Amino acid sequence: MTLAPLLAASPAIQMHAFAALAAFALGAVQLTAPKGTIPHRLFGWLWAGLMLTVVLSSFFIHEIRLWGPWSPIHLLSIFTLVMLPMAVWRARRHDVRRHQRAMVGLFAGALVIAGLFTLLPGRIMHAVLFGP
Ligand code: HEM
Image (cartoon, rainbow, N blue to C red):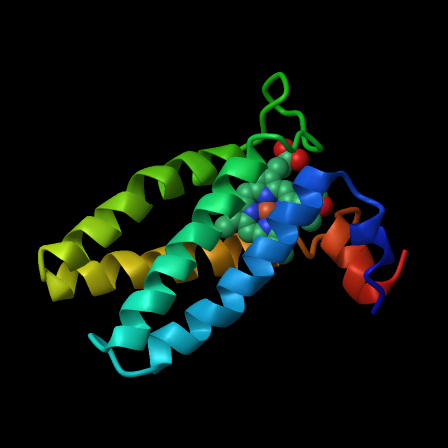
């Protein structure tokens, strides 16, 4: 494992990948820790901020150019940009069941799946884990 390919990438890619890795770690803790507590709320806002950083930075990354400068993964960014405020809004309204469903969906559907796709050969995280 080497961070060199990531540290050689553009600032947008570095910001995106480090925010995503932090969101993955924090999200895993958040999903297993007690809910409704002060730490849950604080770390929840931090997680939402990290996810927003992941999404916004992704709009400045254009490595996979399928439709002009855009890739199918950008659809996931748009989806996350819509779902994230909805998931937070449901917590604010104490709609716990739908808040939980949206957050677990974002964690598993966006972070884990997008994260697994970054491990495909030719992509930067593949080189980080398995070498160039
Ligand atoms: C653990 C999770 C994630 C990691 C480690 C990660 C890492 C990366 C890296 C290193 C790139 C740079 C290009 C490449 O290597 O091909 C990239 C591109 C991208 N990522 Fe992520 N990412 C993660 C999660 C996400 C999530 C949650 C989203 C959207 C909600 C997302 C959307 C994108 C998009 C749109 C691109 C640009 C693709 C292109 O080149 O056109 N990523 N990601």
